[in-house]
Length: 350
Ligand SMILES: *Cc1c(COP(=O)(O)O)cnc(C)c1O
Ligand code: SF4
Image (cartoon, protein in one colour):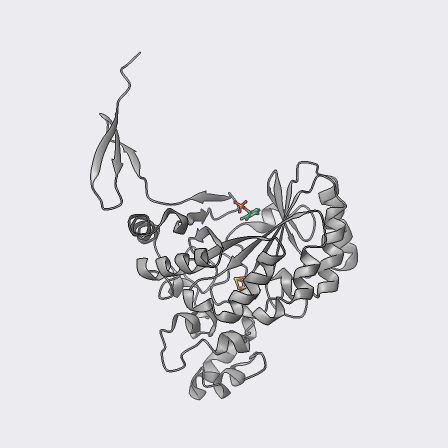
């Protein structure tokens, strides 16, 4: 296999979906883009319907069923979009969305109503000028986060141009890039692309979206090594997904694999209620139990922060278990194995 699979017929020819499922999946494909790169296709076990890689990328008829609470814009990006291409939720950092295209399309994507090929929602040169003018006009912006879509699908020439223009804005110090490319299409993380990202004075951080240790192939390792070689601070982002990584050992193996490659586990995202993604949803209580299990069994280096993006655009908050709780008489700490211990007596009344 040497080309990207974009249609249900492509997926059927590659043996990744049953031929008699094509009709049902056509309606899904008409609504939500499909892309499976050769690197990803090679990881999917076609005979296992619960394969954790296949689940992330292969369309399902369930995507057209909406469940209560699902929202087209679960993280409320549009509420904080002062100009096209910018989401400014927190004072010191903002998102710059230069493209809505991705190398692969994840079935659980929280921006699934806007991502897709063909530049829909990508920025025209005038819109990019407007977005950069907004950043230049806001001296409190310390960090610019390139997101999308996947910003690294842009050509090295366009990336170098964007990075240079950002570095001309003196108050911007940090350039963070959120990408799935190192695992989705590792060869595309070329020396030219890495060079384009690191041409400037900006400190570069790369947040790599990885959900399962099997995604970290030798080719992905080489892509991460190229980024690290250019001085990028490597961070991970993982989406907690039912059937993909909702077990302590699976998450622990992933976090270890990341740390072994010099990637710092950063966020474990509670799944956002994007339309048609109910089959991936894990409850907060289940997520908290997983986090508790990770803490007891894996190194402190292997502990991402479990975060919830509060639906409606209210921001991300840590969503892990309450380790310390008040029980009236004082504070009680729960250890990673469930034991409870008084740690601080109630302050006497003044
Ligand atoms: C997630 C997010 C950020 C980055 O937040 P960090 O906690 O710094 O990783 C910035 N802006 C918006 C709108 C976000 O959703
Ligand atoms: S790579 Fe990111 S933006 Fe693109 S489909 Fe996957 S989750 Fe969504």
